[in-house]
Structure formats: C-alpha cells, structure tokens
Amino acid sequence: NRVFHDTDYSIGPLFESALKCYREQSYGYYELLRCYCTQILLLSLKHVITGHPVIQKSRVISEICDYIAVNYAEHVTLTGICRQKNYSISYISQKFKSTCGITFEQYLSNVRIQKACELLLQSDDPIAEIAFAVGYNTPTRFRGIFHKTIGMLPSAYRKTYKMHNKNGL
Image (cartoon, rainbow, N blue to C red; front, side):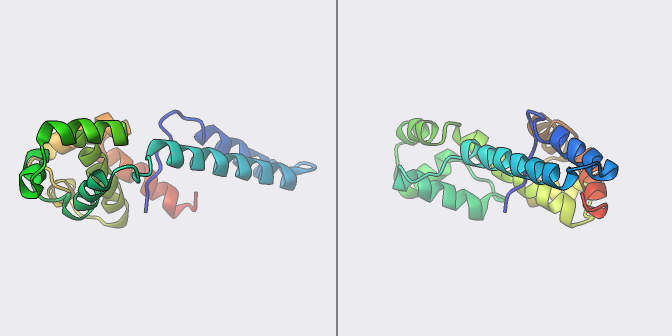
C-alpha cells in the first residue's frame, strides 16, 4: 500500500510517450509499448526500493516504525515513545536517522502524507477532515506540509489523480 510520486519527473514522460505510441500504432508499436512498460516498472521499483529503506537493522527502530504505522493519527512524538519504552531520546533520535536516513519527524510526516493521499483518492471527505484523520491539528498546517512533500495542494492532488484514475491512466 504505497502511493508513488514522480518527484523527479522521470516516469510521467514515459507514460506520455507510451500513450503517443499506442495512439499512433505504427509498425512495431506493441514491442515498443512493452519496452516502455518495462522501463516504467523498473524505475518505479527503483524509487520504492531506494526511497523507503527496509528497516531490519534495528529491532528498536522497527518497533517505533510499527508503532507509527498504527498510531500516526494520534499525537505521536519521539519523546512520548521513548518515555513509554524507556529509551534515551538522543540515542533513539540518532539511531532513527542513521537507520532510516531521515528524522523521526520526517518519517512520521511521510506516513501521514501517504495515508492522506490514499484518503484523498478513496473518499470525497473534506480536506479538513482528512487533515484531522491523519494526525494534523489544523488544515492549514496539513496543506503546507502536503504541498512541501508532494509539490501540490491536497485539492489539486485529488483533482489530478482522481481524474487520472477515472480515465484509467
């Protein structure tokens, strides 16, 4: 259950080229479409594999990530988790960064934004409700973080990707 964002714009042009190839249907188009699909698949997998490290190096960090996956909508803080599990905040903070490659706060934000993307596409709930559902106290803060992370506002994301889903793209 992941939402892929073509942040370096490497896959979108391939889809456009594949669509153009399909529409023109010139000699050898079927084989060319297969090549485009293979390239899109490989680039997508590369983003998934390198963009989200498998956290097997540390049982403690894995437990924290599992906790976030379940409780992302709550008021989750590294301080609270460390108190609950009797961990040193500075140690876990450094361990989290070295294991995941991002800070605890960035990881939590990524999980929340990923879930928000799912909700934006799967429901017609108001954006303010989705903001609260994924753990943000104010819709304004949610919109700012969403825009910084995804590169567009939640309303534009919903409009763009719901339209693509309806058109079968």
